[in-house]
Image (tube, rainbow, N blue to C red):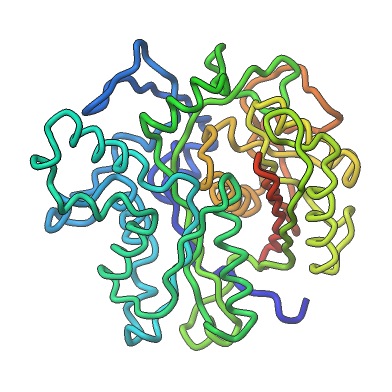
Length: 399
């Protein structure tokens, strides 16, 4: 593509580490889950495994204490991720000329929503702090970022369930290619909360074996995770004017919807998912043999892993397949953005991060279990959601 877009800056906060360097080191070391149990208004009967941002992250240290008292965890996570690696991109332009913001999330600040309601039940509606109501809207983190960094251009929050992070990036790419903006900061954001974890637990989606093993023949579910990954997407002219160079390029992407459903909402025929991947390849002007490895959305949920395996094996054959949810857990809308970050990290370091454990694989996929050397030129990131939405994005590495 002659008009492919540049990724010129990135920052991330993942269970592997807070910040790009810490995440890189954490991926090499292999991430282990922590556990959750007690929250302010509720608690689980037992410890529940979860992949959490490391305790070394302290929002007050990163952001300063001023104004944090009424900001919730999702907002602090987004602001901290921007502050750590991307603050400078907002300092060289007038407010209306600064890069826009496009963030994807499945559940947003659902912890704030549930706690606000729980507080009103426990303490009475007159005792609830009305200032905290602002945290209950899904675009609160983005709104707070607009205020902190004086952004007066694009302000978008996408809630495309488990595809949200990729949807936000594609939305930004379309916006730029349409000529509305020349630079947008885009990515995904999600927190582990009592309420989402409870929902997964009651739905039988959590792994009873407390293991995150994507594509495993005996996989019995997922472990919840969280994180934030952000990327500055811009035109070549915008990057040149700012003195920024490409980390990678967005060469192709596609979004499709599957009206047919199967177990837990996933259509085993994977028709729409297959179309999304083929359309992304066509947009990029690439063939299946050009893809160095696939950053899959496999999580240990047998239903979703099955369509990942169907698409990958039918189109790519024996291409190496990364499954980053083995390191990050199932972080819902943030997951595909975290996969983009991990794929770029792996491409730059020349190794695909393995799952870290050996087990029998279900489906004809070449799953990377131990870190494997790679000379990556083009990487496919996939995300297929239980609601029928499917997305694929191709990254081409800069020299």
